[in-house]
Image (cartoon, rainbow, N blue to C red; front, side, top):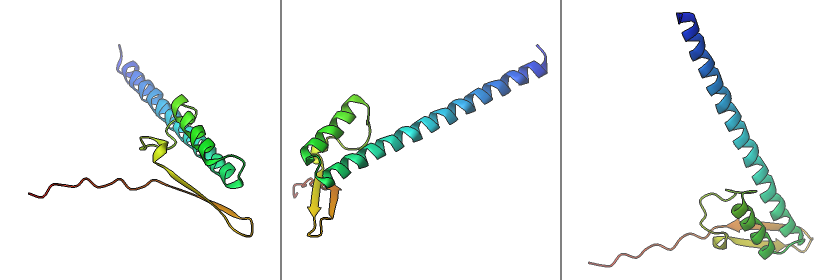
Length: 111
């Protein structure tokens, strides 16, 4: 095999690898954007009063379980840890606050 054919093989291998990496990165970006959009829409429905907080939690939990919104809230063990507050002002405006309570610190026994 000539040196040109050998180098061409390595170049083709590198090109295929780069295309693979770019495609996987693009797929992950698009998937993350779709998850974020879905999550924001669910919170907007809660703010409008269209769905209840419990229904929103079930939707987000179902998305995590079945993979349609998998990883929406990466790092959380369960959505039950979230606190969702909906505040409706006198002028009709509403705001939604979502927070994760800080974990309780483990107490060390005094020696």
